[in-house]
Amino acid sequence: MARDRIAAALAAGLWTLPESGPIGLFRPRSDTDLSALPGDRLRAFVTWAPDAAGLAARGIAMAEPDAAGFAAAAVFATRARVETLGLIAAALARCRPGGAVLIDGRRGDGIDGLWRACRAALGGSDSVTLGHGRAFALDRPETLPDLVAQWATEAAPRRVAGGWLTRAGLFSADGPDPGSALLGDRLHAPLGARVADLAAGWGYLAARALAADPGIERLDLIEADANAVACARENVTDPRARFHWADATAWQGAGGYDSVLMNPPFHDGRAADPALGRAFIARAAQLLRPGGRLWLVANRQLPYEPALDAGFARHEILTAAHGFKVIRAEGPRAGPPRRGGRSRLDRPAAPARRRP
Ligand SMILES: C[S@@+](CC[C@H](N)C(=O)[O-])C[C@H]1O[C@@H](n2cnc3c(N)ncnc32)[C@H](O)[C@@H]1O
Image 1 (cartoon, helix red, strand yellow):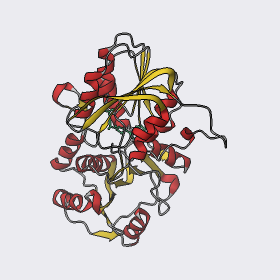
Image 2 (cartoon, rainbow, N blue to C red):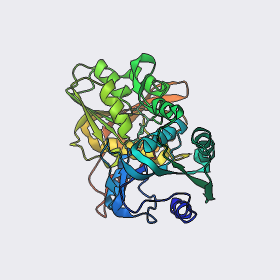
Image 3 (tube, helix red, strand yellow):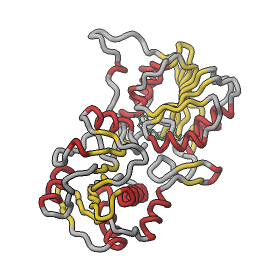
Image 4 (cartoon, rainbow, N blue to C red):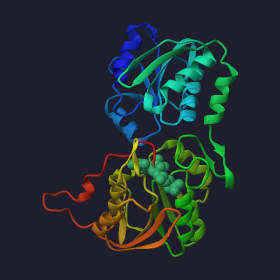
């Protein structure tokens, strides 16, 4: 549908592209249809690892992190308003004066409110509405208004209670998640020499594990969101930590871990999707050494027990409080491929979109 709105915005003259020059794309998804645009001029800013892989496979070039001077730009709204306003501020700042920035999004992701905010800050803009979404364009003024600088500031990484660095759009951006804190309280030595934190977010659980066990020699943090990884690098300065921007369900680490920690994602877009957590549990069983253990926290009502039964010989609830359950599972049963040549782990669920 984004394609139709892009095409309609171009056809209506709402968004004009100069004859030449690079076009910056801010947060296109792997499945965003960009066929209305000149592919060889596109440069994408992407933070979600599966999106980066999907766009690269389609031949879309990634932008250098500090690339600027774009002839035009397009922003694809995320579900987090502050984050999207930060992307709009970045797109405006990185466009040449006079260049036009298209903003495209779905009604359910708050595009109408963004349109109103942009009109108030930068003046009137017509829009096209199609397929439960809206697209509108802003001309980059010579001087950006103070409000746009404020959007950039509000979306930038910031310290929250406890000194943690987080930013808008990340899971538990205002401080540690109560479920993760519950699991953190249960972590104790010995976790083993090699530990993995699957879907590590901005690093809270990894930091708790490293503090709990001086015997850890190496802890791998695996996380799909590059912004979360960047924050984790600041929050977890212990030299035993290693950071990996990757889809955990397809993570090809060495395996053989003594412990895997996780507060797995439980949303795919808008809907709660236990299949995601189940894919993470299966991946943990595969990554652990035979005597290794999984440490998991989840919302109490999430039905992970069948996946734990399938992946592990034993599991027990260590704590249940405040709507969460902390589970420890032992005896991983990664097992050989089933008949037909594929193990259950060869078919991970589709990765979650940004939200946990
Ligand atoms: C519930 S949060 C937990 C974050 C962190 N461990 C904590 O306790 O605060 C889940 C995390 O999973 C990440 N995520 C979702 N799908 C992923 C995937 N396929 N691979 C890696 N990380 C993923 C999200 O970006 C989010 O940071």
